[in-house]
Length: 335
Image (cartoon, rainbow, N blue to C red; front, top):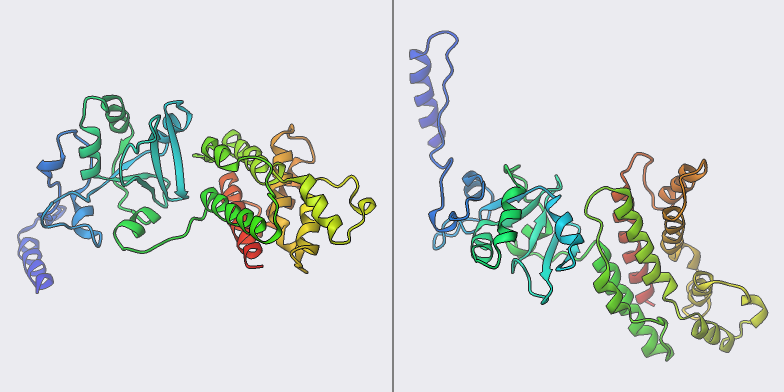
């Protein structure tokens, strides 16, 4: 019915038009200003609110209008000593202040174009205060036009009511901690020799596809997952189970951990299971060395073991590694 109406209107105008003229039917939902949420002055597209499924709220019109920001906004918060950025997944994150309070209660999303998403109503509520003047100005500076894409964990969890498991470092840390708990329960010793939880709080997720950020993530992940292994206790447990001291003499933490998986956890495909940790170790070595003539071939080896094509970006390598590490710890937890 609606389509017939628009066709009739168009036909009437077409008959009156002269050659070379253009005609445009205006949508009456365009450029609507939601007065209750527009005192700060963020740029948004009202059509997003009306056309993206699940956003309309008759009792709070405009609350869930998506507002978009350049991802570079995160560089300030990720490098500031007064804030901490925590990614629940690659497409959902929170910003915490020095008191561990969330800057925006429901957090933020990152869409498929790498742009930040936040609801207009949340921005109006949280940033329209005297104490948040600096934050308000920063967000206004990095506010960009809508690209109409809100596909993300942020949208899925809040609007579609679906649960998405973490696909990044947060998921790695969670499943690693579960593994540590199981080892303590079943084998009676701490397989980690440092307090990982404190180190996790200091971890900075890479924000952009930038070499230094990604290299730093490999250094920190290597410290958390490999250097933290309790070598003394792992050796002791192996010897208790018939492994000779001579056979493990000189082995580093990662090789000892491989032996532990093979013998104590009785995993026949131990080399395949633990492969992501060896890839992490190699990427960590590459991060600390000058790019010599062997750099590209060594990097290609890492990509191959992760099942990646040659032309992937640096951040895609890092994100795929995290997924493989999650799969590894899940497999170990199934023992």
